[in-house]
Length: 331
Image (tube, rainbow, N blue to C red):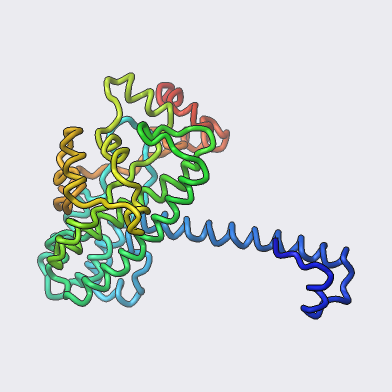
């Protein structure tokens, strides 16, 4: 669209270049610009993915991270557990906060004066942790999470506009960019949880009375949805709440109103507890789950034998999404 004609080329000082040579360079520049746009997009996706899994741990300066060994151990362990790949299952995924993380956290409690609570707040924003952080640092984190929420909302909107989703089921269809959407949805969930926790600690919960953006569910593969139905389950009630609320990027831009009262009304209509479900309030501190060794995975399917897992990965077995259910039954 920005191609110059002969008069415009002369005015720009490149009139000596022939039309053929100009067109050749113009096409090259256009391809380079498209590649640059893809690189920037993938860099944003990578940052969003890392933040969705490990919150702001990857942004911690090394000096701040390593100032206290116990703090570093807790942050590193919790972040590593959060980055584990999800398992192909029709139940809940493993929780990062397990018995080992809890034991490390007890060491922080034992030495509260030495613990770097500001660093811990980057990954574990419970009321206990945030209570040790100064108001200035809390405000700094709130500004960062607020900015990140808007960045993720733009990524969600872009994926939504490229191919509209089946909002009432959230089952992936042909043409949906499920990878981008699910990465952004996880990042939105993480950022939203931190945002809610910081607002609560700063005593600014009244903001939610005016602006209370809803949760964003992930897209579900058709085979997983079938597995849910086959085992007597169905769509999660949160899906119906999400389908009735305004889209989050419209809420953040002020194009649609989504006060806390509206979220509570929709939750009540579908039998969802808005507080326990994290729709209108900060989630309670996580309870430590039992420690379990990281399983060997082949495309999300747990394999008991490491040698068998290596052989299956090398052979490219079960690489298709539609074959995962068969892989689960076979294993």
